[in-house]
Length: 324
Image 1 (cartoon, rainbow, N blue to C red):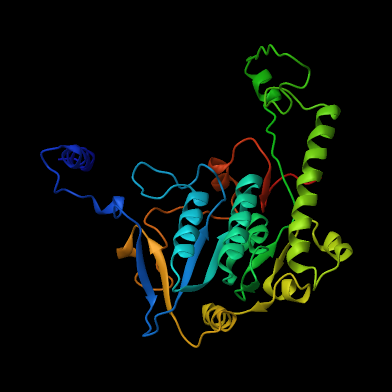
Image 2: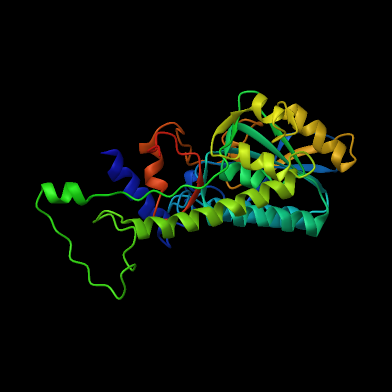
């Protein structure tokens, strides 16, 4: 019997009222569970929250997953942490090239709300990449540590507008558009963008960029002047060493460094390190997969990012894009 047929049978049985005992492991547990990543006899706990992949309102949601999109995942964990008085601090582990402007900003705001509500420290630990929207979120944290091989920065905004007009013309396809105003289909892939439209979108990009600078300056104003921030926030990425020299981060280190720092910030000598997961069997140690489904992205390949992109504006490191 083919694997697809077997899977269909199992799904049908699991949904059947006469077979309530069947449970599919790949769906995860019915409720999110607290799991131990580093054991300790201490009652106090430090929570690890992973933010991985493109920050998108669509990426991460699947019929075969208990998890929602990245915003839902982070919000749930912050809410649960706020309700647990034994959680004394959070290590927010970032592995992301950034993503949607709105998603980046909402997660940033949720971190600020958690800090204001609980008065507990939040530390950002950057893994291989915490760029653009990833750095935007990190700016809400009290202390920023980057792995020695991290890339970060990419402070800026990008919006991609495909132009299919020439291609459609070559294959003899035309598109008729009926609209209420001249700008109603601005950014349409079915025709080239004119200068008036480019000006409108540039003004929007500039507004979102200033918001990005405001967020970074709010978090780093004791280390970086506004003028310097304008100079270094031109969209380029930085290595951990460069970021430290520019004072975009506070330290270079590994998880041990992050744990030592968050314990000091929380006024603790030791604590149990935990995570929340629907997939407890996959979280056997600090570096085990954060969740069952694979949502990682090869940051250097544009074609791997495109499925998670939609029309809109992004705080996103997008290598391979067209240069000015």
